[in-house]
Image (cartoon, rainbow, N blue to C red; front, side, top):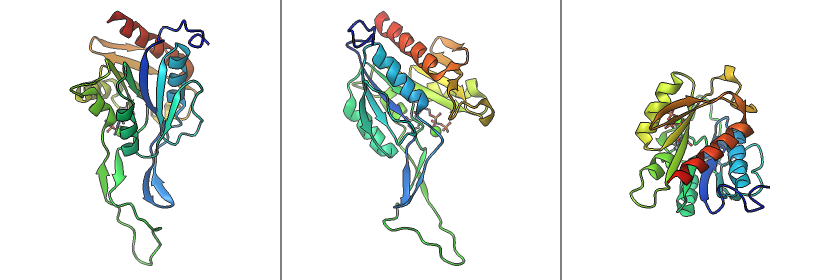
Length: 225
Ligand code: CTP
Ligand code: CA
């Protein structure tokens, strides 16, 4: 509503984001995926749009439909997601909320793999492109603010801090996705924002509230420049 009325803090800003899982095909009927529901990404897209941003929302096959008020680009694989993000640049900021499959099957079979007595399929894997790292390290056309997530189950802050440095992004939102937290597939999130200045832990809150806080924080940062 705020954005629609033209008074949004992010009006005039173009923000590219990724959301949801990716699917990596094995054969015509099977794929590799992960447990991302897309709920946190949807909430972020909605929060950015509510502040008036022009949001390019690149999403894998998520369980929930994308929010209203964003430009939806549907993709399936990590490579398609990368291409859609690159095609959407330039942008003021980029937020990477997708759970990108780290590996894809090297040889997608054009026909369905069949059970054969006495043998098991041997799948070979290769690494997918790291979209966040690539955008964060662009020599020209890098968005001013590049934000990633770090989904961890162990040593959350240490791993996320190292991840921020390795990828070259500005901010990382670290979250503990151990099953006991109920965050994967749940309605709440508990994140620690890691920046060049250090880290701050946000109270556990609904994914909508976390998204709104991030959107306002992003507006602060873009206004400060
Ligand atoms: N990401 C990405 N492209 C990939 C893998 C991850 O853009 N191929 C982004 C995610 O959207 C997220 C961030 O990078 O914003 C971190 O993802 P994560 O899976 O936590 O990190 P990885 O570098 O893949 O490391 P690992 O899974 O081994 O912890
Ligand atoms: Ca990963």
